[in-house]
Length: 153
Image (cartoon, rainbow, N blue to C red):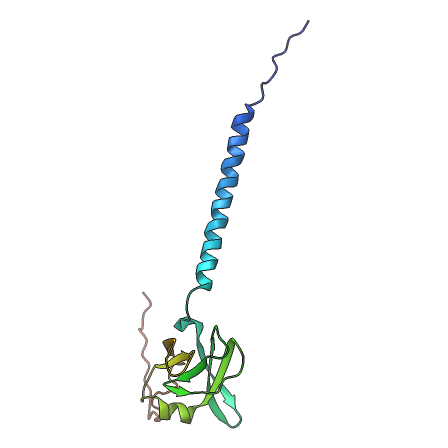
C-alpha cells in the first residue's frame, strides 16, 4: 500500500483574512477618491475656474472671459461693471479691447471677476490673469537685439 503525503490546504481562516484585507484596502482607496470628489464639488469658484483669451468680434478683437456660477441668476461683473453673459451655469462674456482698456489700468496683468448672488453684495471676487501682453505697450520697436552664447555648455 502506497501512502503519499497529502498536501494540507491552508486554513480557511487565513484565506478569508487575506481576502478581507484586500477588500478593505480597495474600499479605503474608493472612500478616499469619493471624499476628494465630494470636496471638490463643495469648493467655491476660484481663479483657475475662469479663463480669458483673445477672440475676434467682427472687425475688432475682444477679450473672452469664461467661468462657472452655481446659480444662473447670479450677475457677473468685470472690474466692478456689470457685463452681459451667454450661458447658464457655464457662462461666457466678450469685451471689446477698447472697453477693457477703459476699465483697466495700463499694463494690468489681471482683471477682477465677481459674482453677485443678490443685490450688490459680491459672493466671490477673483483676480483672473489676462493673456500675456493684452494691455501692454503697443509702441513699435526701432530694433531688437537678441544675443545667444557662442558656445554651448
